[in-house]
Amino acid sequence: MKRCLSSAPPRFPHDVPIRATLSNWLASTAHDASDEVVGRIEQHCPGFLTHGTVVAAFRDLRTVLYRAVEPFLQDGHEDVREAAVLASIILAEHPGLAGHRDHLAVHARTTLDTSSGTLNRRVARKAPTAWGHDVPDPEPFREEPWDRGPHSDGRGDLAPLPFPWP
Image (cartoon, rainbow, N blue to C red; front, side, top):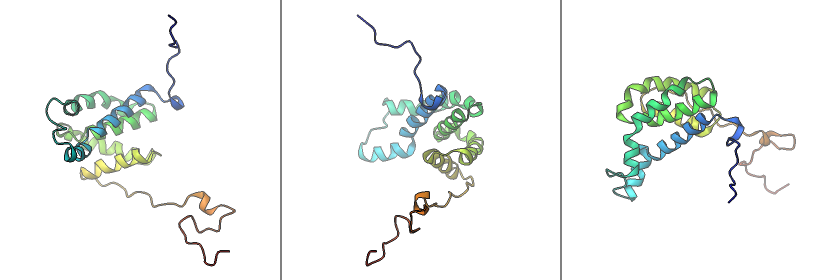
């Protein structure tokens, strides 16, 4: 029987280190088990968070998972640091990690200053705000360049067309 497995290591998009990929996965999983998401699910599926469920077990591990990802907050690779910040922020909603929130708010501000990811910026703004930290207002909506291009009349897509149409 011939094996179809390649001996080459798996490749990740844009040469992102695997520690960033794993931290992003952890952030996504932690979000799925967050108070907000679990609260919404509990409304429709009572007992979702009962003792012994996978989600309850994961939520019990948040302090352990935080300790595992915390060293990557100082990683030399920007993608790794950002992923670690996001995972840490989401995990830090656990009451046992409340003492880490001030430190994470500083990292969240850095993420707001450097990240181009809308979802990452939303997480980096939302949690510190909930923890009582001042977070800069989001950037105002900017028109996209195609609304002001050389063949544009400058109105943008949402402006009404003049009537009668030209």
